Image (cartoon, rainbow, N blue to C red; front, side):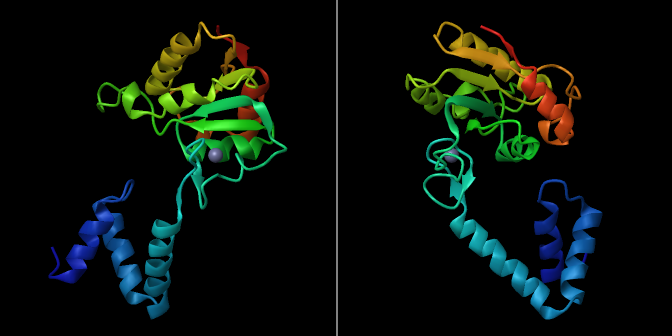
Length: 198
Ligand SMILES: [Zn+2]
C-alpha cells in the first residue's frame, strides 16, 4: 500500500476491466513518471469521450450523434438487421466487409448467473424495428458461447412465428469465445454460410 493519492490512482485503475493490481500499479507509475502532458491528454480525452459518445437511438451502436454512421447511411440495405451483443461486434463484422445491412446492438447477452434477462437487453426496440415491412431478414450474430447461444435461442423462439426470415451464423467460429476474436476470413465465411432457423 502506498500513501495518499498514488494509492487512490492505483485503486481506481484497478477497478477497470482487465486491469489487475500489478498492471494498475505499473500504469499509475507510468503516468506519474512520464512527461506532464501524457496525464493531461489522457484526462482531457477521457472527459471528452464521456461527454460526446453516446448510443445510437435506433440500433444502440456507439455514436457521436442521434444516429450512428451505419443507420445514417442510405446505401446500407434496410432489409437486413444483424443482431449482436456489443458495439465491438459491429466493428468485428464491419472489418470482414461481407455485410452491407444494418445492425441491432442488444447491450449484452442473457445470463442467469449474471442476473441478465431479456428485459435488460434492447429486445423491445428490436421488435419495434421489425414492424417495418421493409425488413426481410434478421441475422443472429451473438457470441459462440453459452450466453450468446441462450440469447440466440430466445430470439429464435420470439421471432420464429414472424414472416421475416431469421438466420444464424454458420458454425466454424471458435466455440466459447467472442466474435471479436474470430479472424476476418472465418467470420466472413460464417456470415456467408448463415442458415435459416425459423
Ligand atoms: Zn445505429
